[in-house]
Image (tube, rainbow, N blue to C red; front, side, top):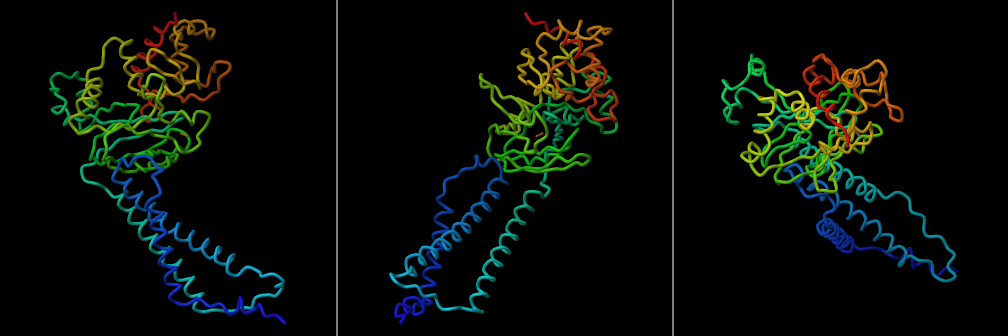
Length: 398
Ligand code: CUA
């Protein structure tokens, strides 16, 4: 006596219903995938469009699977619910070759299509582009430094004649050599393919520009790289995406209360001419014609971000707001008496060459050591050291 059994075993679904259900699910997937608002930053690069296209495609598939699973669940709850006084089991079902074939085939097709699509996007992003701007990026605890080349061929473009240059400078152009300048920000222009070469001075970091949709690890002992082509002028945040120590959060671009950019940002100028006029020419001229006064030179070197001091120290003269190391605002007053047996000059120079020898109480031994030998990491030539010390000694808080 079990008449209600027909409720379950007697139910069959026609092929037409399956086809209609399938069409609804796929259409629903496209609807959700298309009309979900963008939660990611503006697409600043050609690569961003491709990455977002792949993301939308996965969103469509994910939405369709969501509708399928929850649709089946809803139908089961309503149509196959237990009736009053029905304590029977459903009929046992074992083995359905067609069903098993279908539910193996569909995921296999999805995974294959996704693999091919993702591989083609990856291939496009990483392939060498014609006429690339190559920028060297150094990551270290806790700042990014961007290094740009100035070659003899650039002289005409920046309006400098070879005769104007000192012998020191022209010597660096011998055998096709280049002069370099550092800058705390990455600068380029719309439509210019950029090839970023990444190396770390200490631990692993990760170079991430969300607006460009690129992210690449920096691995100790290896050079890694990443490419992008900006399509939209503007400023884009650069972020460190690998926990690298107590100042990890300082390796991201920020904006201070006055609206000034702090830390690492990508600046995309409208065109090459604007880039040359507003960024490259003045910075290149700074390095071609360094000031003779060591105090002015030291200030220029630090303001250019040649060394990653800004993210760890306060120095109001240059707008630094780091709080990992001692405040430098009145270092000129304190250097004299800080460490017995050292003059102010010796104390500051030693703190840069051998920061671990004396650590100011209350601070960690975190500062990188800056070496006089170009073959070592964190190279700082003696003339830079002397200029920086001369400048820092002028910092006397009122
Ligand atoms: Cu560098 Cu986190």
